[in-house]
Image (cartoon, rainbow, N blue to C red):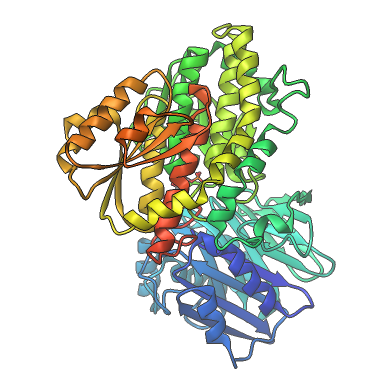
Length: 611
Ligand code: F6R
């Protein structure tokens, strides 16, 4: 939800800002803008993408060794030039970029209007810029004090960068609820919503915590809280490789990330599967293992694809560890006054570690005394810092807006957790424990095998790219995969798609089936195989087009389905790690063939830091 980037030092800021915005464009891409400071302050902004901003800046004065840039995902006010950031205060004293939502902006705006302020945009950010200016002029305080005081009046979430016209040798950064990282160079500092724009300049970073504020010149950084308590900056080393955030020869990040899954799952295993494959260890759970083993109930929370991973987790924990599990949308959980017991273990799943609803649900669970664990991908993000323990997925940066390798890494972590718990609770035999570890380590090669059927994915996509609806069916462990397949298709190709438990089809969706309806059915060899074959027959009897995901060597479905896509033999519990892969590929090719922007689908953003 909006990407922010900033620079203060001796270099030209413009190329650093533009490159940074390109890296952050996954966070929002409906408009972009930049402010450059070189004695004077100039702002350039436009509707559209960062490339549109670059075109817009052509021939303009882009000098300046201090600057800030923003790529927007609209919350308040439609995407247009005026609502794009940066926002300049009414009398031109302050320039602000912002990621987040000022919830009390309406009230603040009315008050500022009565004091003579008028507004050009519909945004909450312009209200903040004017509030800072009002305090600055009225209170005759320094720019940083004005920013700090303004932030004490604000309700909501923010990651901001602020520059002041008359104190033009510094930038003020602050965060609450929206991420902000400061890169520390020699005689220069970098600012960004995540570390990807910073990594090529420095590996020393400071992650701002909620309510932190930094006042930065090219040679100094002062850190304090918004309540003015002095803080000692904690510089951390970044462990991120520049190659991980570039496309590496693939047409899209999404395709690269799908193909990376064998590697990313191996990274998830690293240091956790013993060398002799006889045991699993998750270091981030050591201090909560007893609680987990004794848990009467696990509640899994997440949003979107992470919620789907959570549903797979439910099947895993119940099957292998015999612990009852509830899976909740974080957005519902946080507002519905849920019953939470002190001995509940809550597991929050999030790729970004910044999803606003998931963070709020964690807070609620903690307030009620539950033990809260995180499964996150982005190291140093907010969720791992808010939880009592947890596991990083180590899938590497996921840039494509549609989540792919993060999902398989999340499911891998959940599987490892369930296997460990099953062994400790003695709900699986030692033999099964060892077999599951062995089978897990074979997953990466099996994913690569599935990906070698590229031509088949293209062929089916070519045939059905113009369909208006798709149905996805699965049973048991494959039901969440059906949901995930439908989400992948709709979010990047804009085709309406629904995922259902296959047996539920008879209770309504079957009415949709006709000769124009492709039905993707996950029908691998497991205990519901016979039942799902009957469901496929029911679809065929109504002339539906069946695309079946089957186990290698299945001859029955080859005769019944219109298409079969094979996955290697695998135990039922681990099958979601494989069956999701053909669904990712079908979505990818269908979206490409329909001319959609796969990495940046309309209306979406990678990191949803607003509720
Ligand atoms: C779908 C997708 C989203 C995210 C959701 C949660 O492809 O990426 O549905 O899964 O926004 O995001 P995280 O996992 O960052 O909390």
